[in-house]
Image 1 (cartoon, rainbow, N blue to C red):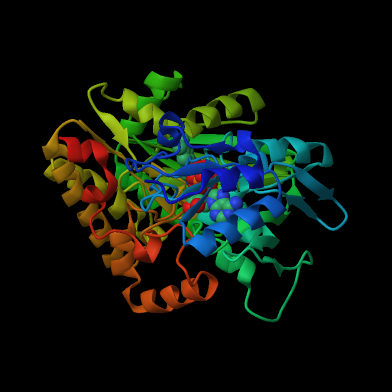
Image 2 (image 1 turned 180 degrees about the vertical axis):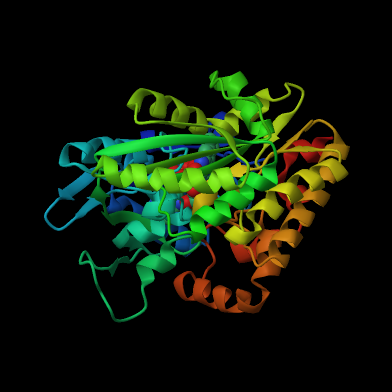
Length: 476
Ligand SMILES: Cc1cc2nc3c(=O)[nH]c(=O)nc-3n(C[C@H](O)[C@H](O)[C@H](O)COP(=O)(O)OP(=O)(O)OC[C@H]3O[C@@H](n4cnc5c(N)ncnc54)[C@H](O)[C@@H]3O)c2cc1C
């Protein structure tokens, strides 16, 4: 029987904002990962006072609470592995202030990234982190995951955009972290501690974000390569040369074929393509930057360089790139695109080796795996394409994931660049951060002594991601 008092929750947020029927709960039991588990109730607060009341109730009864934005996370971050209440923050979606003079905006956590950027456009500014999922991702989810995107190579990730925030603590207290000023020197930067915390510390109810001017001009370039490693080496040379691209993306052949099938991109199906962009206020500056990048690509044997200032073409290519993850399931219709081992960061000098390693690990384990990502920002992504109905696929994936993260650690890389840890990567995260796990647990206890905030994630995540919550695996 449920330990959650549905009537109590209805009193707090109103009857229509509590979901508890099995079909509704099922929808809130997953995200964009392979993981699934059922919550006991879903609550949709409309304001901060309601969040405070829900937290006071849950804390007194020691009921897990999982804050949730759009559920587009790829690692099971919002999957309620210990049941409890999913706190759907999407109804708190007001833009509270746009302050051009002081260079910030204040928003509720449920605001969707694209909606914020639409509202900022008339002011000639934009909020830069913008993941490929910006049509769905909420500001709360982006902060809690430290999301980044194509433009992060020049403009930074969510962490770089956050100035201040208000949070509701597990006991219901409302606290303010950070400052709306550009500098704030003293004390522990608690607003930054919330970045990447994946809902394990407190509920973000308001965020104050900085924005930057929209550049007048953007130029898109494409360079083709016959070897993946040559594209990888070009990335490391571009980033080491003092160039400042505003985007620098790698796409391998598997991803090119899939994107062509799904989004009719018409890209040449070569071993690798670099998509790059320079932006600025004058054409001269951009042309110089583009020429430098082109020269480096040519040094690494690229061919067929094309570039264009044409806005429509640029938008078409980037829209196709944003759909890359869902497109991958078109590569071979018998194989599902999973978000396993989806994200890592390696030093620029190891990009080429990392891309090749992904393909080598895939081949050795009888899997199809792609290598792509916002490589200029240090990210490398892969996806394991596999027949999820076959037990053997999961066993092969288990080996491949372990090998990938062993490699990443061996070259000084890290388990997650931008997609977070959740359940899928807890094992790799715990190995990588072994020396600081106990300190992280103590910080968590200081915020959340009853361990109700998204329990069973990050440093407390499962040692075996496959058996933890993969219902499809368990049924095979
Ligand atoms: C097709 C696709 C493309 C993607 N591309 C990118 C990309 O380019 N870059 C990138 O970084 N990510 C990408 N992602 C991953 C994901 O979209 C982002 O991490 C995004 O920021 C998650 O936002 P969300 O609102 O869906 O958060 P959710 O998935 O709902 O939640 C993510 C985490 O945030 C916590 N959380 C949510 N709201 C709050 C709150 N108010 N207070 C405290 N904690 C909260 C949750 O508990 C959870 O741990 C992609 C995903 C998909 C499906």
